[in-house]
Length: 110
Image (tube, rainbow, N blue to C red; front, side, top):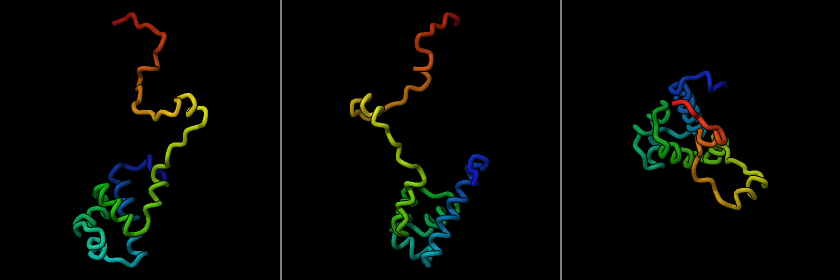
């Protein structure tokens, strides 16, 4: 599926649809899922329609034994041994943005 050609709302709807399909494959009603996750029935309905909160998503994935799927959603960034040595074991805390792009160049125009 080409998510880049979809709108944000289209992606939300697709994710909601997939969560609903997963729930149905597990043969669990929305009400049972709401009770098991301690969230409201309306929260489950919102999630399945693509308008849910991340906290609801996590609770639902936990109850449906699908938390491991989060690794596929956004894989953990791997750091090469060379990068790790260069950083001397420190974790990166901030992005430099465009600041590092023009090092050594002086802009004389206003």
